[in-house]
Amino acid sequence: MEKYNRAFIINGKDVAARLRAELKKEVVLLREKYSITPGLAVVLIGENPASKVYVRNKARGCEEVGITSIQHTLPEGASQSELLALIARLNGAKDVHGILVQLPLPKQIDPETVIEAIAPEKDVDGFHPYNMGRLMAGIPVLQPCTPYGVMKLLEAIDFKVDGKDAVIIGRSNIVGKPMAMMLLKKNATVTVCHSKTAYLPDKVRAADIVVAAIGREKFVKGDWIKEGAVVIDVGINRAKDGGLAGDVDFEEASLRAAYITPVPGGVGPMTITMLLANTVQAAKSQLIPLA
Picture 1 (cartoon, helix red, strand yellow):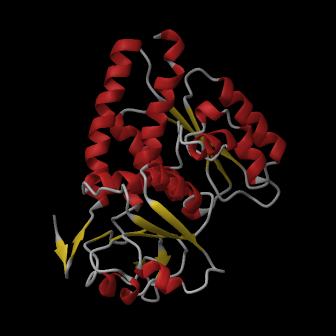
Picture 2: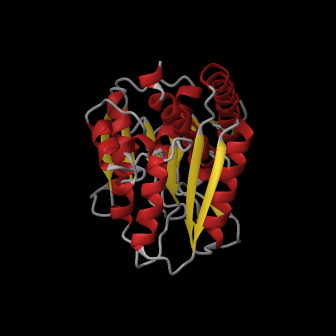
């Protein structure tokens, strides 16, 4: 494992590659045993350049592991009813095991309505209230991809979460809240911090695990990090020099942390990989009545 200053670098690309190799074997097994190829339908509304890149990367990931990628593109001015009608068709399509509607959505479409319209068993983003509720109850099925990927990174370094103090900076439904539930399930003691948190640096200094997901470049300073902590940087921000930077000051934090994720190349590669994992899991779950 590569080391930078004091910290070992958690290489998300390497971990993602190993997981994708395992998924490829699972896809082959599903095809040979059940004549089923997992299918992921991705819906893109409009011509947002960043969204188009994300969709293209998801299609490449599907191709790599043998998942069928099905793309549906609607115009920027598409109505909510048009999108909901498409989702209803995909819900009923037997060759579609996962449905993902690429965010952000145009202003005329309500994201919550769209999320709730996706059949829970095909909700490979893990955002449907049913799947979020299962996660809260400690019996997850399809889990939000980014925090799910973080847990896989912790597994990859064989870090024992049990009994550790974890601080999550950010309380979004996409990362912060589900991250807290996943760490709690592994018996961590979890503190969720946000913009109203008082004495934030002191809280971070007490953490064995720091997950930064606040969306502010180099917000977490090196002297906030406890000696020997594991630092997971979920943030991806456009830096002043045009490159990418995380929510953590990597240079400073790597002087104190035991393990740290880089940006890019840390959490990022894991998100799409866990989307692929959820799609395979969804296909397997939908096969249960046939098993």
